[in-house]
Amino acid sequence: MAEVSARSLLPTSSRFTAYEMTQYILKALALEDGMKTTNGNTFKMHGYGGTLNDLFYLIDELAVNEGKIKKIVGIPQMAWAANGERHIPAKNTNLNYPEINLFSERVHYLLNQMVLGPGDASDVSTDLPWIHVTEYGKKCIASRDILPYDSDGYINRIISCNQHDDWDVYYIQQSLMCFNHGLWDASTMMLGIEGEYLAERLIESFGSFLSRNDPAEKQNYESRLKACGFSISSKYTEYHTFLGQIENKKDAATGNLLYPDLNTLSKQMDRSAHYAFMNYLRLTRNSLMHPSSTIMEPSETMLLIVSFLKYFEKQNLYLEYYSTH
Image 1 (cartoon, rainbow, N blue to C red):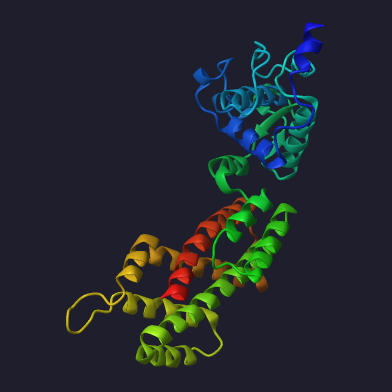
Image 2 (tube, helix red, strand yellow; image 1 turned 60 degrees about the vertical axis):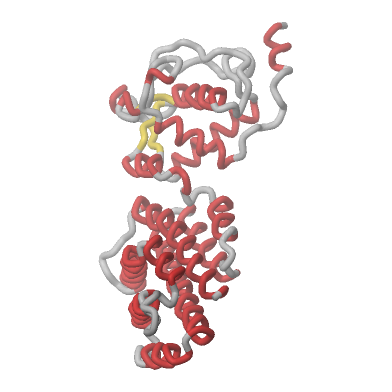
């Protein structure tokens, strides 16, 4: 009766979205200090191997400690890698049945994405409920703030940039869809297409900025772009070079910077690093679009997507500047 009464304190629907549960799984796998857990263990302490039961109770404890869910019962005391008993809400877990099901769904999703693998060699087991974190999974843990598995969250970050447009969203959505279906090469190619589209927007917006502020330099800029023909990469190189000249241009009479805000923006953005990233993305995409031995690994594609979000957000600051000056 006490168990039934306690269970009535639990909500009947999940308090976690699928994305939130995935994040809790990754956070639980990333724990390092066993002193912060009830049973004194973490996956890292055991070579990133354990059981689904170990993972489940780390999530239960994390969610309670972070105030995501209320504590109704304590975490059971048990040895690491023990199979454990059936999870029953308000008896041996603070999660309800929909949340237990969601945990299982997200674990299997991460198994399919090769973040987790079945079995744990240290326990001489090759199948579930034993699990291990893959080498790729360890990289995911390190980058769990903006992983591409959360397509909606990723796209919301893009949409939050004032200068995004529908084509930005479309290309990035296509890249994420390919990634989440295990099509690493296709995902990278779509990201490369978005990178070139963003480069075209920067080139054109910078030209409009010059038209309003320095018509003479605009003519010089247009003639240099025209000499590039149809090559986006050559035009982007000219844009990058010309931007460096304009941001450092000074008034002949006073010696003061003509565009101090632009100069400050470029210093904050580490423009050279962004140029290098853009070139790497372009070259990678080009190699994938032609017969070659280049094959993307999931970790390479994931890190490109993670890096691109930060790149996009910072380049949008340039687009914002060009449109408002």
